[in-house]
Length: 449
Image (cartoon, rainbow, N blue to C red; front, side):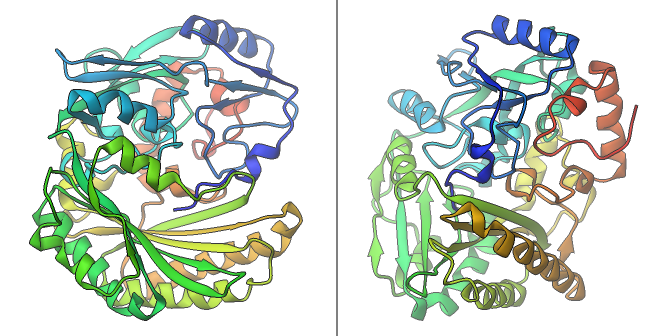
C-alpha cells in the first residue's frame, strides 16, 4: 500500500498542541469545547483523508508525545500511547516473544484501532479493533473514561469502528499473543509477465490459504509506475511461525516466476521496518475502497481496468498507482463476534464466503495536479462499484481506514448500527463536540441533534 504524506499534511492550523499526558488532553478538550474551538487529532498522521490529522484555522492536537509502550505480561496486554508508531510496538514486544494485532508498516499509527485494522495475525485473531481490550479516552467535557467490556461497554463497542466521533483516545490496551520469537516473511516482487498467474495465487490466498491455515499472511497488491510506464507487484508474504521456508499451502507464492525475494526468518519489527522502506514523505495521496464477495474473475477484471485508467496519467510528475486486494475471511468476522462485537456490521451478512477489500490509491508530486487526478479517480472507482453491482458481487462495507474522504464509510455499517452509534454519541457527547468541532475524518452520517 502507499503511505506517503497526503494533502492533509499541508493544512495550516493556527497552532499545534503537544500534550504529554492524558490530563493535558482532558484540559484541552474541556477548554476547546467550552470555547467552540475547532481542532484535529493527530496520532502518527498517515491518514489520506484531508483534515483527518490536521486543520485549517484551528488547533492541531498532536499526540506524538503520548508514545509509551508498557507491557503487562501477567494480563496479556500492552498499553500503547496513541502517538506511537507501530514499529516501536513490535520492537518492544519482540524480545518477549509476543505480538499484538496491529498494522504491518513501521511508521503507521493506531488510527486503525478505531477503524478496523489488518495485521499479520488477522487471519487467526480478527481485526485490530477486535483485539483492543480497553480504550483510555477523553470524551466531551474533558472527562477521562476507560471503555471496555465491563466499563462503558456501549462506548467500547462504538469505538470499535466509530473513528474519531466519540473522544480522543490517549492509550490503547491491546491483547498480546505468544510467538516463537521470529517468523518467516519478506517481500516477493513479480514482473508484469507473471501478473496474470499471480491473480490466481491471490484468489487462492483469499479462499484457501487464509481460510485453511490461519498462520498465513499476505498483502496482495499491484503497482504502476507512471514515469517508467511499468507494472509490477511487490507483495508482503509471511508465515507466523519459526519455519525455514513457506509451508506447502503458501508455495504458490514462490513457485511463480519472480525477480526478487527477501523472505527469511526475522522478527516482526524487522519485517515492519522493511515494509516501510521506499515510501517517501511529501507526496500527494488519494485513496478509495469498496468490498466484494471473493470472485476470481472480478479480481482480474477490476485490476485490468484500473491498469488501463492509470496509464492515462503517466505524465503526471511522480505518478504511482497502487491496487490492493485484502481478504476478510469468515473466521475474521467470527472473531469480532466472539470478542464482543464491533460496529462494522459484518456479522449480519452471509458468513460462509471470504470478502475482498478492493483498494485504489494514487500518489504524485504536485498539489496543482489534484484537480486533474482526484475527480477522475473518484469517477473511476465509482464506475467499478457499479461494475461490482452488475456482477452481483458488491458487499456494502466501505472500510474506514482505506476510504476516500467523501465515501460513506460509517453509513456502510447499516442503518441499525448507525442508529446505535448516534444514540451512543448523544449520550457521551450531547453538545456534538466531536461532530461540530472535529470536522476531519469520517463523521457520523447526518443528521442528529
